[in-house]
Length: 249
Image (cartoon, rainbow, N blue to C red; front, side):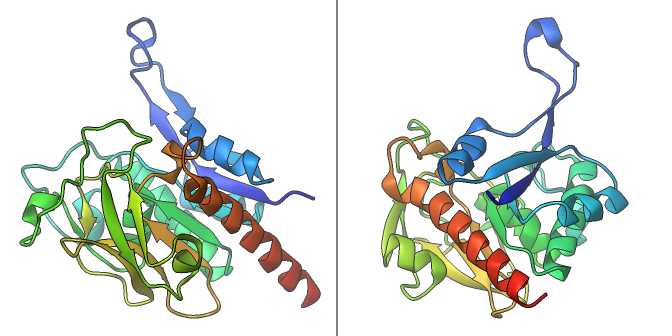
């Protein structure tokens, strides 16, 4: 049986001039394709309430958190900065409920870009609402080159889950204007950009399989072996986790 991976969805309201204000639940195609190639079955969760979030998580083997809007600073006790962009507090609340349930059930989570940010907030961390607030900013984190093109390098802890895949350094793409400020206590940083921003984290303990990356591997899967490898290795990790769990039931 292929592992079933749940992806909390987003709502699109400006699909085209003809369908303006016609809401569509979606997730970016790169996640679907990356997981299909890796041998998994992705399922999109529509934004819903906390109780439904628990049932959605129980119905799948693992979670992938996708990109999208800014995370509302109200979720971590701050007022909106002048450079804050679009937010969706309903999505924030739903995804945080998904994250907390997945954490409680020890289900694997792969968190990408906004996914990394909302995961950090859900577990008690905070964000720079705009990278301009980071005092040592020296790298272009919102690239102007094409999405599949690597824009900057990251240094990676070599014996981490991510380091075993990428090695000690990797070149990644970059489309984020928010970033981790205070990392949640249950997480540990495993990759940094050259200016010192956290670019990836993993869970501190051995009970949780959590990988968060600030870049967008789903946009690079057709041109970058490591990008597709991230999905391949994650799905293989989910399979192993599911088999181990079944042995203990």
